[in-house]
Length: 495
Image (cartoon, rainbow, N blue to C red; front, side):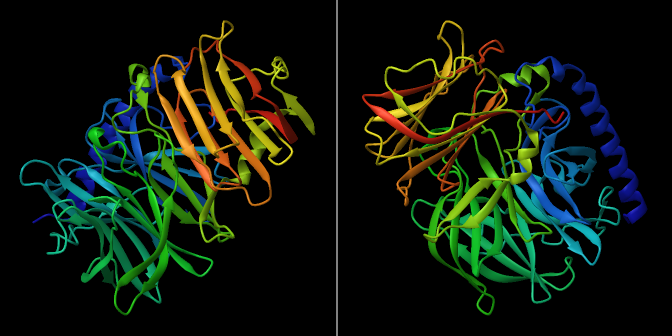
C-alpha cells in the first residue's frame, strides 16, 4: 500500500533530478542575444502555460508548465516563482513532478487556492496513447513552496458522459463556502466546461455542463479560467487548435452570469483576449487590491523557436490588469508596477508629423523600450502612421507597426524581423470613442506587445532580429498626423 511517506520520497527525488537538469541547462542561456530582459522566463528549458496563479501571504505566485530536461516540448512538470510586485521574480523549486502511473506523461495545467492557509494545487494527471486518460489530482503545501501530493489521488478519475478523453486544466474557486471546479473538455466537436463541487477539495461531485461553446468558440477548451468582475462573471478559455487550424480563435473571454442553483453559466457576450499569434492559455489571480491580474504564454506550439539552440524557450507576457470598459467589453492594460523599470525618458509633447519627416527618432535606439503615443484622429489627414522597430543600419531588418486611420486596422509586418519571417498580421481596432488613438508598445529583446486604446485591443508577438538592429523610426503616409504626446522609455532588465 502506498503511504504518504513513500509518495513524498518519490516526489522529492523526481524534483531533485528535474532541478539538477534545469541548473545544468541554464549555463548556456545567457549567451543568447534574444534572452528576454524584463519578462518572466525560467532559468532554462521549455515552458508554456501559466498555472496556479495565486496571491498568497502578500506575494504573487506563478506556476507554469516546464519540461526540465530540454528546451523541447516534453514531460510536463510545474515550475514555480514568486514576486512581491509582479516585476521582480524569485525562482523557487519545482512544485510538481510526475511520479505516479496516472500522471506518467505529465502533470498538466491547473490552478491553486488558499485553503485556510494551506496552498492547494489542483492539476491534471496525463497519460498519452490510444487509451488516453486525463484525471484530476491534488497537492498541498504549508509554506507555499514544497508540495505533498494527496495519497488518494486522483480525486476525479474519469470524465462524465458530457465530456471526452480531453478532460483537463481544472480551475477552482470558492463561492459561498463551497469549492467549484471547471474542467476543460468538449463533446462531438463543440467545446465545453464541466462543473464539479466539493466541501474539502478531495471529494468532488459532478454538477453538469457549466458552459458550451458557441459557433467559432472551438471544439475543446483548454485552460479554462473563471472570475467575477464588477458584478459580472467571466469565463476564459483557450480553444484547442492545430497548425492547420490557424484561423481559429485561440483565446476568448465570455461575459455572463453564473447560476449556482442550476450550475450553468449564461453567456451574454464574448471577445478576444489577445489578437497576436504568440499568446495562449491565459490565467488570472485576484490580488490584495482586488485587481484581476492576467498572464499568458507568449509563444505558440507550432511557431519557430530559435532560442531552443541556447537551452530555453517560452515566456510569460507582461502582467496585465483586467477591467470592464464602458462598452461592456474587457480591457487588458499593462500593470502599473512595470513603470518602475522606466529610465532615460524622452518626451516629445504635442507635434505634427508629416510624411516628409523621417528623422525624428534617429537618436532613439534600443531593444528594451516602452513607447506611448496619443494622436488626434480628427485633426490628422494622413492615411497611415506607424513605427519601424528594431531597425538595422541598412534598413534590411525591421518590424513595422502601422495604424490605418481610414479603416481602423493595426498591421504588424514581421517579414523582415530577423531570423524568423513572422508574416503580416492585420488586426481590427475598436472605434475610438473620444477621437483619439492611444498606442502602447512594449519591446523586449525578442518580443513585441501592443496595447491600443487602453487595452481594448492587445496583441503579442515574438521577433528575432540581430542584436545590432536597434534603430527606431516613426512615419506618416500621405498627409500629417497630429500627436497629442509621444513618450519613449528604456526599460531596465529584471534578470
